[in-house]
Length: 122
Image 1: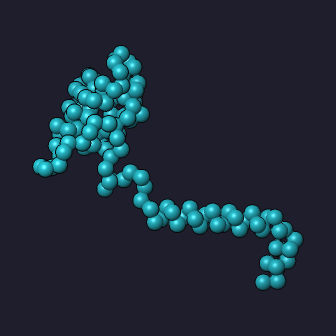
Image 2 (image 1 turned 90 degrees about the vertical axis):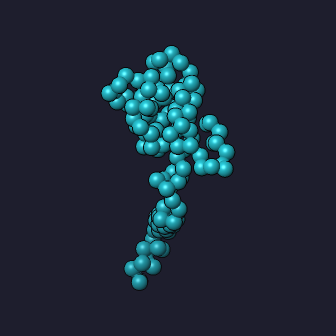
Image 3 (image 1 turned 180 degrees about the vertical axis):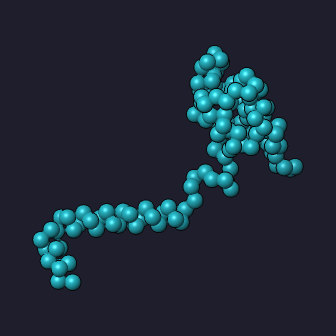
């Protein structure tokens, strides 16, 4: 205990910095352990956006790969690693068109339960 008191007296700024880092670590660990991530398997998928890849859309929205490829205008059997923005640019169509096609496929594949209005397209 005497060594700790002597250390605090000799290096007050370093001790304060260490205490601040320890506090930041504790707060971060608490948040990480108590709050779920913003999007996880049990929650709804994020809204369709141009940054998404076909593989991400397949997993997030649980769509059949062949139908998504048809909606995006991809050759059968191809596995592009491009985003929707890049695919739209290479096809010369607006990204909103591709997003609308995928949204229609999602509505067709996973219709809302009876009595619930259909979700608005993103």
